[in-house]
Structures are given as C-alpha cells and as structure tokens.
Length: 395
Image (cartoon, rainbow, N blue to C red):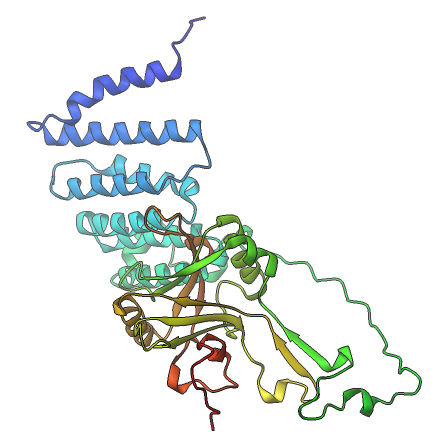
C-alpha cells in the first residue's frame, strides 16, 4: 500500500506541469488544452473545499476558453463541451452558467450544426425545475428554432422522434398535498346589537367594531425592519430579458425573508399584481430628479370588496434622492417595450456595486408611475408627497 502525498501537493504538481504549456503561444491548441485542464482542476478543488460556494466566476472563465476555441479550427473542443455539460447539477440555476450554456450552444452550432446546438439548449431546459418556467420556456423556444430546420437530423442525433410532453421525466413534476380544511367558525350575534348596527359606518366616523375593518398587507414588518431598505436600482441582465427593478437592502437575510415570502404566496410570476409598486416623480422643486417609491398591496376591485369595511394597508415608502433620471428613464423605456419587469432584492454595503439576488426575482406586469401633480389625496402615492406640498382630489 502506497502513501500518497497530500491533495494540495498533488494539485501543485499538476499545475506546475500544465502552466508552462498553457502559456506556450507557439502551440495554441496544446495551450488551450492545458488551460482547460487547469480550469477543471480549479473547479474540482472548489467543490472539495466548499460545495456551496458561489461559482459564477468560474463559468465566466469557461466562457473565455470557448471564445479562444472559436479561433482555433483544429482544436478538439469535445472535452471542453462535455466538462461544461456535466457541471449542470453543480451550477443549478446560476445565471452565469445559463449564459455559458447558450454561448456553448452557439459555439457547437457553428462547428457541427444547428441541431447539435439546439440539443444543448433542450437538455438545459429539461434540467431546470418547473419553478423556473420562464427561463425553461425561453430555452425551449430557442431550441425549437434550431430543431425546426430538420426533424430528421434530431432523430438521427438522438435516435428517437422529437420529444413530446409525455417524454419529460415525471420526477421533475412537483406534487403538492391538499391543505387541511380550515375549521368553520360560526359568528354569534351579541345581545343588544344587530347586524346592521355592527356594519353601519357613517362618513367621517371611525368604526368601533373590529369586523368593520379590512386589512390587506404584503408587508412582513419584522422582515422589513431586519432588511433595512435603502433604495432602488435598475438593470437589464440581457437584451432579450425584461428590465429589472431591484429593491436595495442592507441585510441579506431580511431581504430574502421578504421575497421568499412573496414567492411562496404569489409564485415567480405575480399574475394578479398582488404586489403594488408605485412611483411618484418630481416630488421636489429644489431637487427635480428626486422621486418616491411605494411598496404595498394592490387595492381590491370595487366588486371584490365589502363596502361596509374600512380598508387598511401596510406600506413601505422611500424617497429616492437621485442625481439624474437617466437610469429610471432607461428602465421605464424598456418596461414599455416588454410590458413586464423583474422585481428582485439586492444588497448593498456602501463599498461596491449591488449584489443582485436573482434567485428571488418575481416577474410583474403592472407598475404605476405618476407625476406629483397627478397624485390625488386618495391615491396610494399620496404618502410620497412632502407634507407641505399642495394636493388635490382626483376626478
């Protein structure tokens, strides 16, 4: 039985052999092969040291190798492609890995044909959980374009007919057990008071019965206090993606509590616009780029509410002391084009760029934007106006 040297020592030995080859410009194919081996070694060591670490940067490095391979027609990229593909379970839903897969699909399409590139996108779509349905549909759409050129090519490559919904592995579907039926509570009228007395509220009076109040809230007060909301940021991760509005928080745990709660209640797509986002622009004459942002619950439609109840809303609002309206205008322009945007949290420490928590993004379609002069006393955005600013009732 042999005593092997420590892992770090063995890795150092391998690096010492590969690094000179990787910088040898006289043999570019061998150099790229050595770079590939060094990057695979780096990934393996990362997995051993910390399996939960953020590996976004290493997918960018793999992308750089693909760029180099594009200019080397004699380079055998099969090993590089396979290494990227087998890393899928490790990468999960990492956005940088998603970009790498699409880059690799374009690379393979150029080298071996559109069908093979489309198959890479198809495999990626099948590997995603169904809660990533937006990304899954987008990838399937791109794969379909490549496969549509030749169904026979697909059959030859995969040795089976084009896939149908029934071909999807059943273990990808999630099963949700039915919730237990809630107990039915029967209301009992208190002596001396009738239902009409209990529900009657006169104009100008506050109700005295708790049943005359209705509460709508998407605000987890403790989570918001923990998160420490600091501002907003706007970005667009890709040209073919809707833009993103990020709420900036100081504390990541609190931010995750807020958005995890929303995703649990409303899903990754807020189809019914339960989360109300409102913006009031030009709220300060002295600072024309300042604007206010409010986060609260969507008001119920008249036919869905009890007219006898006084509704109360929990809100969070903040004045954005912007020095320019460039970023906001760019976001609003892109929102008008897509008629959708992603709402997600991001964290800031005051030292660098925001850290976007893309795994908690929620797709939305409704955004209310008003000039301060358009805000009426009964509008949700009224809370954003300075107290000394004249307001008016809207018709």
